[in-house]
Image (cartoon, rainbow, N blue to C red; front, side, top):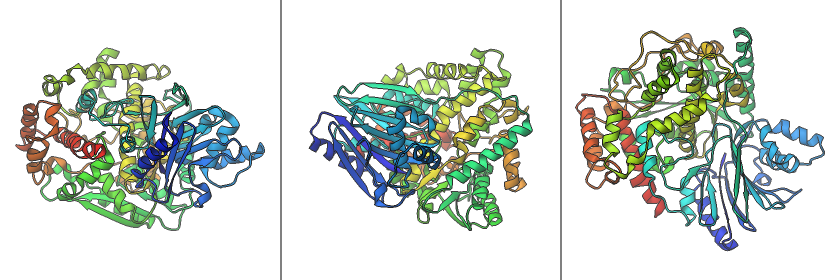
Length: 622
């Protein structure tokens, strides 16, 4: 894992080198083991290295091909790099390092752009082909590794984080008012949109060819999720899934540094840590808990330290915990905001803190992220898929589950009197759902499978970006075995009824959205995955309820954080006043403060937006 940046322009080589150096210096937290810049022709590239595979200086980047002179900067891990290396060796290709970076570069030299189809890993990279005078940009299937870019004024500028683009000296950050409204609607931004005007996410599962002189861009998807259910028996599928799971953990625990694991207390991370422990004498595990004095009964369930401790004892791991209170957020919120950059789904603050703990002991942690989205872990969201008779009814009903922050009427009141009113959340949602529908033609439950594709491409994408920022803030690489190519491919062949069964009692919505105060009680999602993972964890975990990883914000906001929220987030000098009706925001806030309703998601959204604008953007533009 590393940080990468680049610029393609007709600026002088000196100007490009200066810009690249400023950009990469803003990302040294991602790569504390060394950084370097290379400029050739109209292309400048730079890299900050976190050394994981081949720790020698010969594996430093930017790396130059000894065969063609091509240059590469690469962030990520290629888990099948040894297999690709052996195939290239069989075709007479020579290597100077044992790094996966050189494998990427040599694979491009040998196969051209089609080499992307061979990769199993998490990555964002840029290759400058000096012979063809073009730059290739690519990002892994699901977007585990972020890559941002700006295209304007005769330049293409890209980097692992938004702050690097601002550091170039060519990009000034402004709030995109449509993105602001979209976040208030969905607690997320979809597709390539970011909170900042003209800054885009490079699309996941895509590769682009940029002609370095004309700056023309041709892009294609090399992978996109689609459902094609298998006719295999449930037992055969479980056997295949078990083999794929153990293989994925095995391949993702290969490195030249120790591999350790997060341990949240949920079934996914607990099983992965258990399987990983088979490969090492003793692994280290890391858990985040919360101070629970005076919190609600629902929030008591957020702390999973007891489950984590039981698994740590079972596998004999060297176990570490961090415990957070509201004072920790007040102390660290500006540092968190600098690394988070823009708000995405959920709260990545606990991830940021547990990553800081883990980084004191290790460079690499395994995570259980992805199991819920691939295997239908949120049954309360899928009720519209079994209760709707038409596609239009389903999309309308399902939209209600993703209008997470505030009600439709409150959203209209919040932004309706501003320039944001041009944003149409229902239309955006419908477009994404219609796209998902075209890729579930073979499904026995098209509504449910379309919702899983939507969640994979929106909700999971947001989680992955947040997890990357939270961990790489401390120079910590996070690997996600449940998102290995083999498991992704298998998951999309598993019929929906093997993944989830619906309960008769339906939760009224996501906890904390539109005033909902009850935690969902479902334990019926991820059926087949639970069965495969159950031998690795205690029964209390394998049959336990599904819940998210969140601080007890409902209570925290009403206590120590309340005066700061009123004085800063909603105060007279708050930048939020430029983008929403502050009186409406105050009315919703007071409903939460009084205990009349639970608006924790909305209040968190205001805090995240405030910090992104008042803290991150102000500092990045300085």
